Length: 172
Image 1 (cartoon, one colour):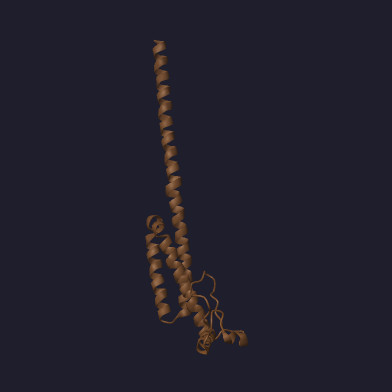
Image 2 (cartoon, one colour):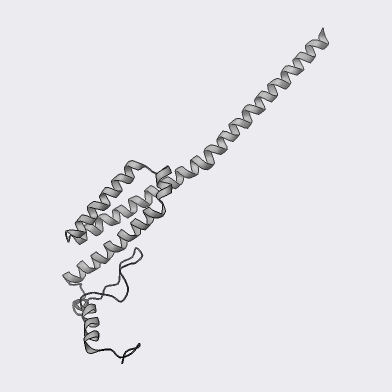
């Protein structure tokens, strides 16, 4: 008997074989930490088998890749307005290269490159946020201060000119 009703032996065997080949209960969508992978060899030798290392790398790649695409999607307006477009193009090209490594079964290298790409994109977004702040806040405040200074200077000069004119009229 299973928790949600009867389980056939074939279902149970399929489930347990899935664990034996490194499949976990949850989906492949993880936060940026290492995904949980179950390895039957690790229990015996305290080392992951080659298959589990690959499975771990595949799940890590998928996690990073999904996070990068979501991060890029959520920041696309900011990056379009204030981001370094040349750097963004390089990051997108590198992401494509990393995906090709993944398709070529070069899992360890694909994970290494996709992790670097994640940090590059994060830095690019932070730089764009800084530029956004500078352009929308600091520069507008500076322009306002310059305008106030100019107007104040013009007013002071006019007042001084009127005083001189009144004084010269009184002296004559």
